[in-house]
Image (cartoon, rainbow, N blue to C red; front, side):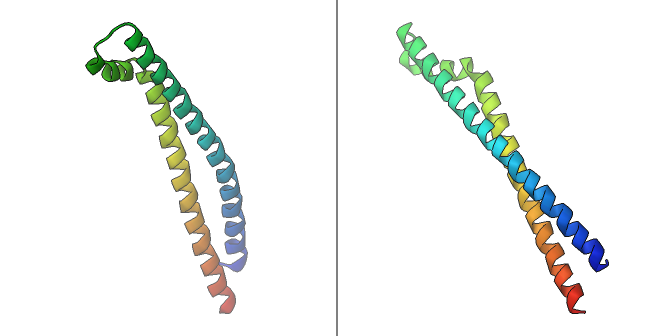
Length: 108
C-alpha cells in the first residue's frame, strides 16, 4: 500500500468513527428512553395488579408478562447500542492498525 492510499484510508476510517459516535449517542438515548418506559410500565402494572387483589406471589410474573412488549423494545435498544459500540471499537482498532502501517511506511 502506498502512503497516499494509507492516508486516505485513515481519513475514511476517521470519518466513519465520527459518524459512529453520533449514531452511538442516538442509540444510547433510545436505550435509556426504552429502559425508562419499561420501568414505568412495569411499576404501573404491578400497582394495578395489587389494587385488583391479585395474589402477591403472582403479581411480578403477571406484570412482567403484561409489559413484555416494552421489555422487548428495551432489550432491542440495548442490543442496538452494544452493537454500535462494538463496531466503533472495531473501527478504532482498524484506525490504529492503519496508523501503525503509515508510520512503518514513512520510516522505510
